[in-house]
Image (cartoon, rainbow, N blue to C red; front, top):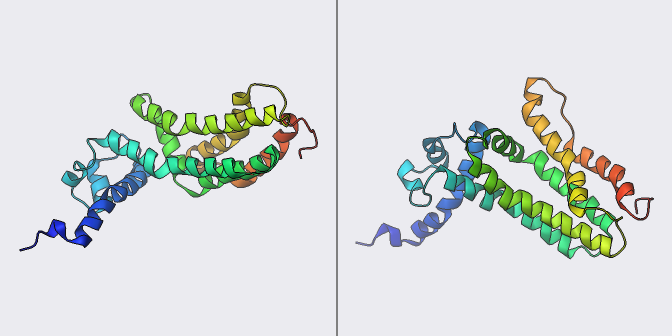
Length: 214
């Protein structure tokens, strides 16, 4: 009798299983936070047994790391590719990249997970380390590198490029945290992509050697 695990459909399903678990865990972490999320919740959302989780992951932290690496970090890779392929001036690139980041923040569960990391990193410092190493350091590094190159070309004024990078992206982070923290209790939220576009046009004249923002 043939072994079911050797059936092509079974093998294909088996290969898909880690991605299904990661997708389920992303949703559970966004809804419940890290400490309140149970492996049973993740298994149920993924449609697998709790024991099946241990075929792919050692513990809940391993699952979180996979969520960051496989479900969130690829957004950074896509933006990096966009930046490296862009042939135009720095100002045009910023007008492309920053709204793209804002759109991701506005239309995904990313903000809920950011709030979770900020709120729970005191008890679970590894969450902050993973988030920093996989996302923050990488995103800041990409933007800082773009600014350094623009300074070399004479497009951006002298100054600390990392500080410039933070000044470009900080309002989106504040708006996302505002949405997750204060909108549920009646706070008026922000249109994050519109905020990003307005912020760019406010900040660019201060960054660019050409003060007209071109």
